[in-house]
Image (cartoon, rainbow, N blue to C red; front, top):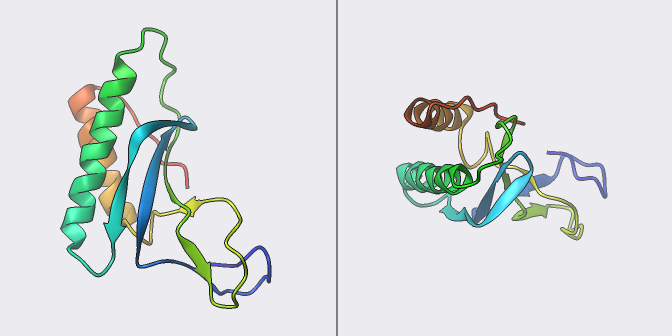
Length: 122
């Protein structure tokens, strides 16, 4: 990924950190999970699914809920090889921590279970 400070293709997601789930740009305090890229990849997917489902259950408790228009999986655990300060915003974890296929499977499974349609926002 390109670093917004030095404009080099030197930005990457660290091997471990936190992924935060946002739905319609809203976040839940417990709507995040830890990842370790050196560990079990299926554990990351399982934790993402669990946290996403908790978020959907939490949202369903509100009476004036907006339809879900976008879903984001983001992380701030990034680093630049050039040593730039990591003081910029969060980046998408999709394609790095979780594959597109894994995220789409989670969204379709939860969409069927809760009769909702989800759109991934890259």
